[in-house]
Amino acid sequence: MIRRARKGQSPLRPDNGHLHNLLHKFYEPKFKSRVISNSLTGLTISLSSSGLCLVIYLSGLLSIRSNAWFCVLALQAVLYLIVYYLLTRTEPEVSTDAAFGLT
Image (cartoon, rainbow, N blue to C red; front, side):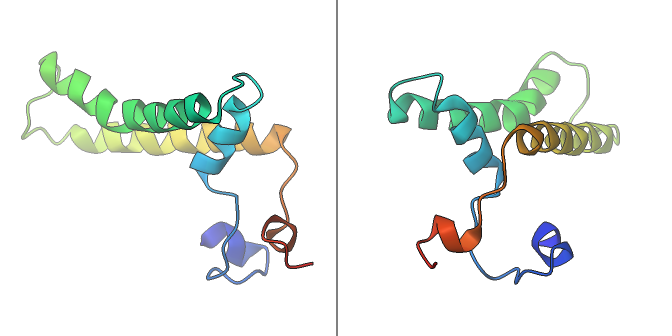
């Protein structure tokens, strides 16, 4: 919503600028099957969020009551921003109107 508001666009209109859309566009040319690219998109997001927390917890690096989990959350936010930047840097932004056939 912040991204769209900064561009002067309505935050309530749909677009294809979400991380899952960008990851899917990244994987789609590498795999011929849309099912595989869609599955990899979901796995990438799941492993980078829940998977990271699960590995840290199961390995015993942090207890469940540790305040250091806020650092893990901050790390995930930074990784999100880096991946988002890298994916938008190489892909031209899709117009909302063109993406939904409104032109």
